[in-house]
Length: 183
Image 1 (spheres, rainbow, N blue to C red):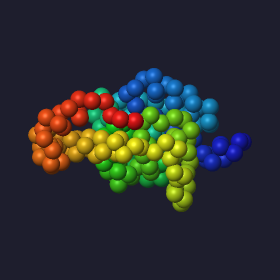
Image 2 (cartoon, helix red, strand yellow; image 1 turned 60 degrees about the vertical axis):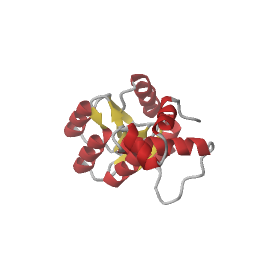
Image 3 (cartoon, rainbow, N blue to C red; image 1 turned 30 degrees about the vertical axis):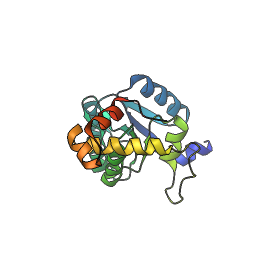
Image 4 (cartoon, one colour; image 1 turned 90 degrees about the vertical axis):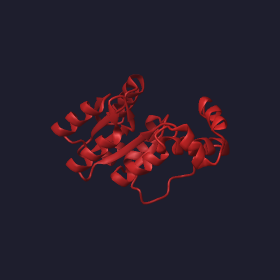
């Protein structure tokens, strides 16, 4: 038994939920090489069926899925298996939702794009020590953009309400939202 297999434990079941099929398949192969018994689902419905039949010890769940919200999967897994280690993947502008997922029972969250090493580290971390500082932290422009995206999502994608809350002109906000996020 390798060192990583010892860290994983006796139950190496892992559920991966993401609607990006290419990313899902690539991550599944990488996690299998690391010793996990992987099951995948591109939908909330499929993930809920998997959890109902056999709740996994580990899960990596994308927040935004085509047929619903990944938080439903987090909640269902936490109800079925309280000791599961759940990592939530979040794309742009969903940091507040990721924090909500942690409050609902997710172990941690990772910003997309996350690679297999990041996912493995998050799944197997003891949670006792602070993680090392990021190699490439977000720029100040990116942090500002993330904040605008978070408020925009909280306002149900209402540009006028978001602009009012951020104390900015609506047209300025529309220009920011139309652009791609800074790196």
